[in-house]
Every structure is written in structure tokens, then in C-alpha cells.
Image 1 (cartoon, rainbow, N blue to C red):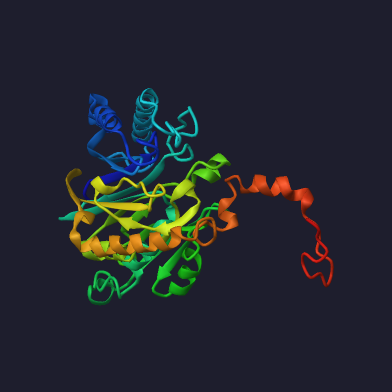
Image 2: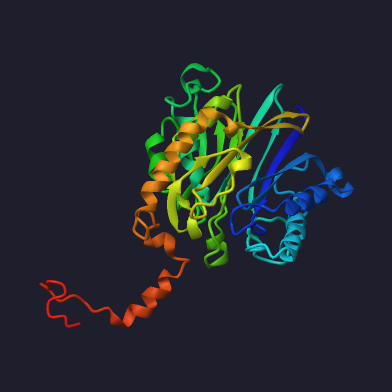
Length: 378
């Protein structure tokens, strides 16, 4: 059995430039400098620093396994150093994803989003790192279902003997902090019942049923649930392995040609289309949006990251962007009305509960047979 490599993607919003739109170049420079230090070089095989919107993404490869304290500490200290730079520049929301000053072994529960997987490199190991801004972990439910369970998207499920047995989906309940393993295709309908509610149920990981190999993993951290207050949406990351028993690169990208609606956008309180864009265009400005997704492709070579290829720079996604703008136009016309504004359960961490409390004493029980405002005098 060969040596295993770990791919870790850890992200955080440590300050936006300007507002929530982008990451200042000085933060990228600081992050690269931290990961270039000798102690980091001894820990990591390779790294890249990428951005989407106002989120800083650390893409790291190493041989330490998942949830490694040293790797997570390196990421945590990098984000702290970048926060200091953000504070000096008075960037907006400096350090907003860092919910604690104390590191406790890994960054889970401290604010940053984490997606990690460990595996033995194949003869050719193409991977895609998806990074999203102005949305939440459930944003991956639709594309992951299409990639790994929909034969109309992924013909390999039908004609590739290495994929024909299907995949196991690990689904997390973010409210009750539970998980369930569901088999596709046999339990497809049960799977859809859950993941069709992406605000609560998220696909955490997917495994091949042929050999048990991990195929995909995502971040499932929800900041408002951890902080107990509104701190914006959670801007998730996703790692997908491709080819040879997994979806082809083109099959993994195809779901994003149909920009589905996700929660997030302005103040984390609206539904909007997830627009696939090149990294250089991942600067959401219109109503702080629409939500964006970037896809960076790498070939792994003994843990080294060969790339990236910026997949959504392809003009083949121009129509998806056009459709996303049309959907954005329609939804913006609804203003504060649902379904553009999120439903009340998703607004729990905004000012709406305060408004309800303020008006609580003015609510009256409806009398039986009441016709509404009859008898009301302004």
C-alpha cells in the first residue's frame, strides 16, 4: 500500500476590500508568506492561496492526515496574521470568521470552514477545488447530487463499470448534529427528501461503493449556529476527485451550467443564483452578489499541486452567467418579499426576532368567526 496524501482546504473571511467584495492583495501576500516559512515548508508538501469574494482559501497538501493539529494551527495562525493586516487597512469585518482567540487543537468550531480528505494517489489524480461566496454549505447539495447520482448529468454512472455500483452519501443534520449514510441509487428518494432542504441537511462526503474510496468532501460549518448570532453566510468549500471511477472533470463541472438558487447574497438573508465565474471575476458587487462559485483544477503529483486551471473562465459557462443575471433581475424585483428574502426560520439570527419581540404586546388573539380588521379605528 502506497503513502497517503491529505488535501486540506481551510477558508475564512478575515476582512473584505471594499465592503464584502474582494480580498486585499496584502492579505494574500501575508498568507503566502506564512505558508512559505521554513516550519510550514517542513509540514506541507505544497500549497496555494486562492480567493473568492471576500474569502481567503488555503489549499494545502501534506502527509499528516485529516484534523491534524499542526496543519490546523498553521492555518489558524495564518488567518490571525491576516486579520492584523486587515485591521491595519481598516478592512470591513476584519477577523469576522474567527469566533475565538484560543486555538484548541483544530479550527473546527472556531469559525473557519474546513474540507479535508486523505487518500492514496492514483496513477493520475485530477481534483477540483470548488469555492463559493455569499452562500452556505447546502449550496453543494444540488451539484453533488447531479455529479454522483444523476445519469442525465454523469453518463459514467451508466457506462463506466467503475461507477455503475453507485456511491454512498454522508449527509449531516446541522441542527441536531447527526449524520446518516445513504446509498445511491437504491435510496435516491430518501436522499432527496433530506438534501432538498439544504438549510438543514448537507452532503458532507461521498464514497465509492466499489472500493470505499472517498470521492468528495465539503465544509459544513454554519457560523450562525456556532456563534448564536448573525455573522453572515458560511461560504463553503468542496473537494472533488475526478476520472477513473469518479465523475469526469466535465461531469463534475456540468451541474454549474444551471445556476441553482442558494441562500445567502446580501446580509446572508436572500436567495440568489449561484454564478460560476473565473477567480478574477469572483468579486460580488451587485447587492453584494449574486453568489459566486470558482472551480480550480489541479493534477496531484506526489502531493504537489500542478495548476491551477481556472475552469469557469471557459466561455462555455457564459450562458450560465447570463441566466444567473436574468434570475438575479427577477429576484431583486421582489425586494423584501419571500422567496427573495429567506423564510423566517432562516432569519432567526437577524433583527427580525427583535421586531417580533417589540410588537409582541400588540398581537391579539383572533376571535372565533373574526373577519379580520372589522371595527379597527386608526
